[in-house]
Length: 182
Image (cartoon, rainbow, N blue to C red; front, side, top):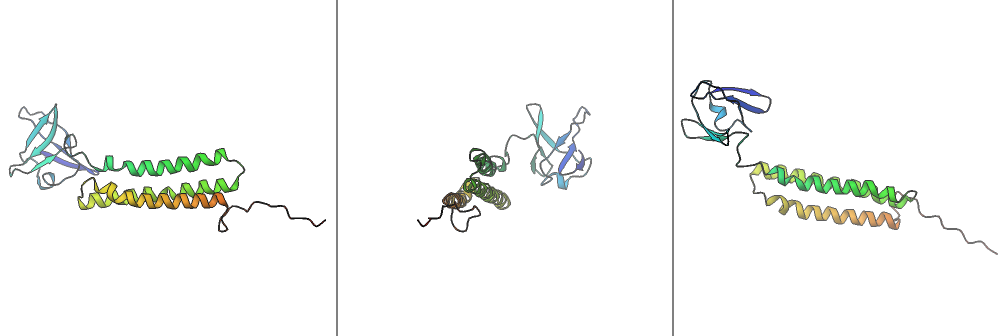
């Protein structure tokens, strides 16, 4: 096997018994690729016309990028990040279009947009912690869910406060005519 690393994706060229080379990429270099020297022998597992795994003489296994098993859990786990941030951005972006000239609603929409950063950031941090600690996939909604609900409650409170014109609001208070003495 001839090995080379290009950027982040390790790559190898196993040579078939017929002498034909076969390009294979890996998600990471551990455990087999990091120990290999050019010319060492490995056994490749071919499935549906692709090398999906290599095994060295010591019996260690490593999946290739084409391997069907062990799809990274961060892909389906990343949905909370995209959905939560995206929904808040859409609501906060479209809301002012329907309330032109109303400063309270524009302020409420701004608060919704900025509160959308919270669930997105907590989703990213939760995914990072899950991956770094090898927690199961169910840990993502178990950790992120309660945090997202707290941020959602805060978002709703700030948006309703802006609509009511709370004193610490950025929106100007509605102008009330002063009574005139007659």
